Amino acid sequence: MEMVDPDAHLVALKVMRLMRPTLVGLGPVVTCEPNDLAQRFRHTQESDGISGACAETLAAGQVMLLPQSFGSIYLGETFSSYICVHNTTTLPVENVTVKADLQSNTSRINLSMHEHVKSPVVLAPTGTIDDVIRYEVKEIGTHILVCEVNYTTPTGFSQSLRKFFKFQVLKPLDVKTKFYNAEIDEIYLEAQIQNVTTSPFCLEKVELDGSEDYSVTPLNTLPNGESVFTVKHMLQPNNSCQFLYCIKPKGGIANDLDTLRQFNNVGKLDIVWRSNLGEKGRLQTSQLQRLPFECKTLRMEVLDAKNTVKIGTVFTIKCRITNTSEQAMKLNVRLAAQFSPDNQYTGCADFMLDILKSGESAEFPLSVCPTKLGLIKLLPLVLTNTLKNEKYTLENVVDVFVVNFDYNNEHTNHQNNLVRYESASNCLKQKQVQLQVV
Image 1: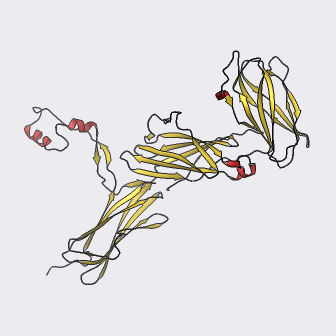
Image 2 (image 1 turned 90 degrees about the vertical axis):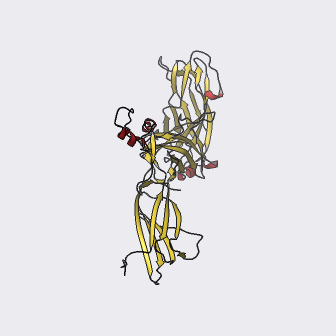
């Protein structure tokens, strides 16, 4: 009588990860003329699949290599696996159920299988049941695929077969952001994306999804709609590229300073890429926050000013002053020109504005006549709150380029909505952001 191993199972569980092959380069292939080596060696070479008449062509390029192990996967990609259960006996196996769980460092997720099957399966002799599971990985680190098969033997005993498959989830890219507060109602975001994988990939989409309080204008295309990148966002390993966006608050938020200070979340970066064989991945950053807006007492804006003027020609700039303090102010505006040979312009201003309550604004013109060629600066503009005898000095109002010939005065040569703050600060800051799967 043949002995049967009591630990032997009646079914076989096979698990194979579904992934695209990789491209590998071939080493040097030995080829020769028919008369160089013995006939026996030549016959062996001709029977080799990669060493025939086209061996030199193969060696110059790459061939596809099938996966040799469970391998690793990048965050944001889809993990796919083929699971097969086979009855290796000549007897039917009843009540067959298959369960698959994906376990990470912080969670355990059940991956549904055979959704169309409502009851346990009976496996006929040499019968097979199989299915494909898919899951978009959302966490970096070690993951374990746990596959479990439960069934009932012909003698009525319940049996369970379990297998474990470990793989790593790696970080595919690194994202750094820089915010620049050009104005109170205009922000520029530079996003730097770096490929930290071992193979090139193509950035299919990089978009900034603005929050409900901000609108976003991408600055990554030319006026004709073409991308500013010569190659379509193809990133080699360790290479990076930058994307630029202009962000503005919606509606009346820009005019409400208190509300603007509270809404710092501007949106999320949505990134989609494909590997060299088309494997798709998608990640989304955490909520990006603009630099906090700080304006203690006054806000100064230049609404209209020319970039270039002719020497000896009077030009006027239009300004707006906003009371951003909590107290009412009555301002005296004074622009003084020093009478010296080194003075860049002539002209002065000294007048009073009406009382400005908190949040209110007033507009006024300033006219000067340039006396020197080159880049001149209008400074200083002194604002005095006569109610409290407080003085505020703006060191630079506007920069103007002075030439000695007539200049074509086009609309594109005007600077609009230029902002100067009471105390200038370095608003440029770089930081890393957290990536998450969407």
